[in-house]
Every structure is written in C-alpha cells, then in structure tokens.
Image (cartoon, rainbow, N blue to C red; front, side):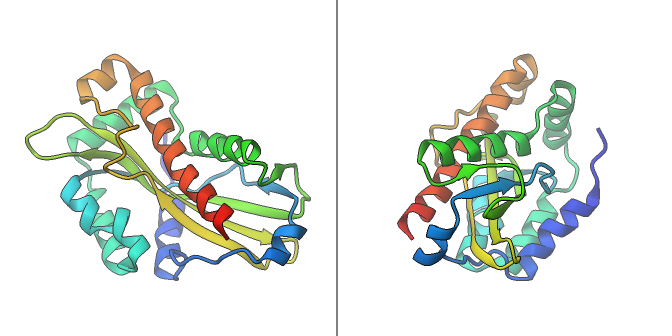
Length: 216
C-alpha cells in the first residue's frame, strides 16, 4: 500500500494554521443542521510510535492545550521510520486495517445513537470533514513491550455556504484502559487485536467529540 504524503502535509498544515482551536456550535445553527454528509476520503497522517512521556509533551496531548508548534515538531520527529512502526504498518497493510474507516464508522454510529445528526448523502444541511492528524501505538515505557493503539480525530462542520459551524479535535488517552495493550508479537499473531484496539481508540476519541458537541 502506497502512502501519499500530501494528506500528511495537509494535516500538519491544519495545526499550523490554527485548526487545533475549537469553534462551538450556536443554538441557532444546531436547529438548522438536521442532516449531514461525511467525507469518505479522510486525510490521515503517518503512523507514530511514541512513549508515554512523549505523549504528555508532544501534540498528542499538547495540541489541545495550545502547544501546536511543538506538537507538530514532535509528531514529525516521532514518525521517523523505526522497527515498531514498520512492523505495525506491515500488519495493517497485510490485513487491510484502515484506521480512518474505523473512525468514520464509529462517528456515524455514535451520532445516530445519540440522535445528534442524521447522516445523509450530499447535499445535506451540513458537511462534516473528518481528519486523522495523528495515530499509532504508545509504548508505556522503554522497559515494557505492551503497546496501546491511539488516535486523534479532528472534525469540521460547515453549512451549505461553507461557513464553519463547529470545529473540534479529540484523542484517545494514553491512560484509557478500555483500549487493551498487546505486544507486537501478539498483534502479528492475531491482527484482529490491532484492529480492535484501533476501533476501541476510535470509540474513545469520538465519544469525547460527541460529549463536547452535546454540551454546547
């Protein structure tokens, strides 16, 4: 599977241009938006393999706190090719695991379950663009081999005129114990463990987005 660098550059440019900041939905706009369409081609950054210490200091957690520049720099550095990343991508490519598809499916599922939106084909009242700026696996410490999948999800909702109505970004936490940890050897022996882990991470990140939207 070939990985196009254009979506990667686009994702990071979003952070540099301030897209990590949020835009809250107004009550008036919420009444107007009953149906939404969701992009099928989802921009996705490269896989990251980071330690818990890096997760606390780089963009995976820092981007939400305003450390956007440092977060992007850390993310680019952490995406340097290494054995865990290469082996994980090997599992993903061989078994057709698409993290962006898992996230899109989870977004539709939770939006429907919470009765927040009705997903429809375009044209709809609004269009949601999902972006996956960063994702991958976390290593708790250099002395542990168990890995926890994680994702960061950004959403931008626009009306028919292109006006941004809602913009938010969330991620699955490195302390989210609902996402099980496994070794690379376990992922290689049972690829569904990696698929399920990324799905669990998607569930956690999307749930935060839905909670944020509901509280507006």
